[in-house]
Length: 472
Ligand SMILES: NC(=O)NCCC(=O)O
Ligand SMILES: [Zn+2]
Ligand SMILES: [Zn+2]
Image (cartoon, rainbow, N blue to C red; front, side):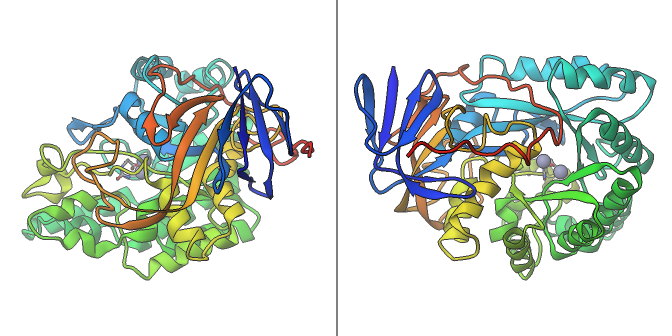
């Protein structure tokens, strides 16, 4: 059945205009004024923006971590994503040393197949680079369409890879056409600082932040960028939290090194003092890298505005406060790291970013959708509104005022990190490949309708793919 969305304001990364949008067979087939309604379901989007569905390049669904497993899985996580206006996610497939990569990928397919309500892809963690890994990587790219590799520079003795592994991954990625992603913190220094803190009886959540100072995020970011330049490769730094790391990215880019940067909603809005909340409440705000002193937020907004940082990921990694975060009572190093963020990513960026004049409306679309689609080989199928692409559309009311709360969110966790925060703007209806997943704020999607996305190689013409001329 055809659908026609009328009276909305279409917003892309470059344009804002009034037009109707005709959808057939899951694809946007016409954009223009006074399009014929014949044979189509008419959707009135008066007063609303039509954004391309959000692309969240950073999620951890059903991920084992810190002796437990994240609360949101591919079903609850993607339902929450859809409510928040995200129609594509890219999740991190973890690997174990010595295990064939294809087995790790199979595990991630088993978690997601038949569960997701919106489309999804995988990044692949690289923990070691040896003959076996190098032999498998071409098929990871060609067969699985996984064109981004993740290296952790922190989480010593768990996920952390050494510099040699990072450097070899950058070299392999360059040859294969993949983008290397890093969690940039100096895991060795952190490990030492954590041990010293615990020996000194410093066990409260705030010491999580104090043992991970921002200079070592800056140091690791600069180190990864240096290796990237040496390998003539390409790098994407996930969850940038602070001025030091943003500066390291800006410096590298100024030297012509291909480095991209992502931040997350929590670093733009929350700060280190949240970890000092009494009754162990600070544990709710334990992320790695940690929340920073408030002044860093201006540096992050400015980096988004000027293009030093290009994307926003949710880093969705949710654990209940009761029963999971409390594994770290009496020892902050045992608090599972991460938080629920997948649902509020667009709302926070719109309300705090666009509404407060920190970024433009078109930048909002670029940051939440288009740029990630381009960097991760999904553009233009995902990440824009133009003729011939997937009809992933968010009907967004920019005037609605609401208060974020765990009472009303759709994530499976027992708290929301933004509890009580007032935001302006909300997705009203969300379509994935032309089908409503959320309609008038109600879930109407189908569990399992989300499709696995094989992605194109890094840089594959993404800057030269132009939006087709709009038929007005
Ligand atoms: N960020 C975080 O604290 N948890 C998720 C895992 C990661 O991205 O490092
Ligand atoms: Zn990380
Ligand atoms: Zn993460």
